[in-house]
Amino acid sequence: MGEAKQEGNALKVIYQRDMERRVCFYMNSDGMLGFLEWQFFESEDSWAATRVGQGSRLGTLEDAVREANDRVVWLSSATAHDV
Figure 1 (cartoon, one colour):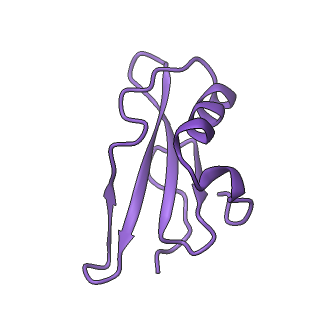
Figure 2 (cartoon, rainbow, N blue to C red; figure 1 turned 90 degrees about the vertical axis):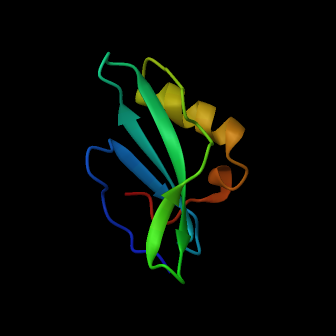
Figure 3 (tube, rainbow, N blue to C red; figure 1 turned 30 degrees about the vertical axis):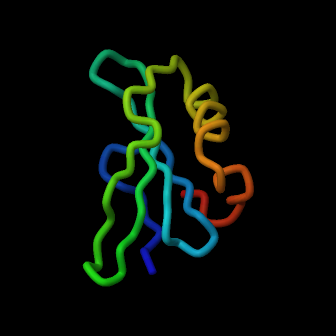
C-alpha cells in the first residue's frame, strides 16, 4: 500500500481510500494547472504515473479538481486522505 504524503511540487494530493491510487495537482511553468493520476505497485514498492490528466491546462486549482473529478472515476468518492 502506498504512503500518504505531499509529493514534490504538488499543490494538492488526493488518495483513493485503499491508498493504491492518487491524483496530484501541479502548476506548469506557464502558471496553468494540471493533474496526474498515479498507481502504486506493491511488488515494486513504487508509484507510476498513468495517462489521466496529462496535458490539462486549467486556470485554478478548483478547475483542476473539477476536471479531475470528471476524468478519474474513483476521485469523487475519495474523501479520505486528502493531503
